[in-house]
Length: 457
Image 1 (cartoon, one colour):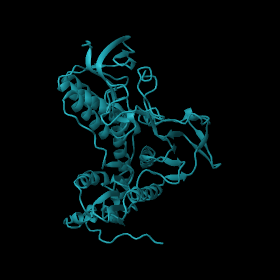
Image 2 (cartoon, helix red, strand yellow):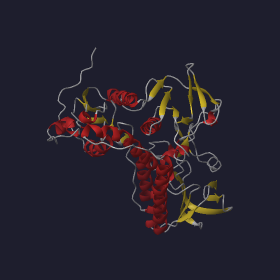
Image 3 (cartoon, rainbow, N blue to C red):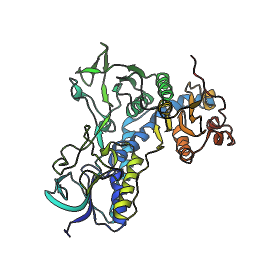
């Protein structure tokens, strides 16, 4: 039997890598973890968590105005961007410390360095200038923002990584992209008082979601005052005086601003890691090819999370990491179940979605029934807000099973987490119908929709 320094060495201490490493260590494995930036990964350090804090901050911008309808009168309102960023950084530091303590308490060794593969069992720690060996290696390096380097002046634009560390709040932001990151940051900046323009190459935003979600969010952006330009791309970014820039679009339109933002997707972080040299196969997009057990083409090398480009969500990476540890170090073969994963977009109003969108359901099932409603929530009747709530159920007409549930409106992400349980349990439309409504709530609409939606011809 070969003797290795570690039973498991994990490259990348994000959500998936940390969960896998902690569990493996708790099961008795000798575990080493290398992270070149900060323990916690994209979600905790430069993704979901700081983004949600900025979302909260931006929502207060609307709340002060809407409170007037409920009798509140606020004095002169001011917003302090540096204070928000400093408070956000303090919270991220706190979470980073928790992740480090959890790993150490489980018995894992943490290496603050970039790590690359030399072969199937050898990892080179760049900062330390030495090698370590491991029986099993787990790649959990996540992804990174993608930038279109073919656009002249493209380097003048920032990505989500830099957005959390801006020294001052911009005046006018132009964002390239139509996915959830682009939409969320458009709402954040607009809520904080910035002028915002969203430029997307497709026909409409959030194209991977149900069409009714796309339409509802697009209208919500317009109500916020976000300018949305579709079927256009950046052709050139030019530097003007000071912080000002000019973005030239493929449509011939030019937009002057002081911040340009790439939000056109993410790519797996696999470059320069020695994967090819170790024999690890990659996809055309640079993701690590893995089987249902998260095992790569090299028997002892595994990968979880966004680096595999399966379902790029933090909770999925965590569950993949847990399944890996259970399988390899706890003698309990476990596979990740990718069905009915709930998702959210923290736009204004936010999105909650679980199950099949209508277009996918119609391809997969013979007969589909649609139930949907669109209404102004009670809270907005006095606040004066024009935002509406959309709810939609996609149902298999032959079995009555609810295949998908899609919501745009306040509280949508919280509702959809609970609804995901019902859909996984096989809830039918009759189950929804026979559930007593809770009044007055927006959620009661989910159990009171009776009429099938028939599209106008």
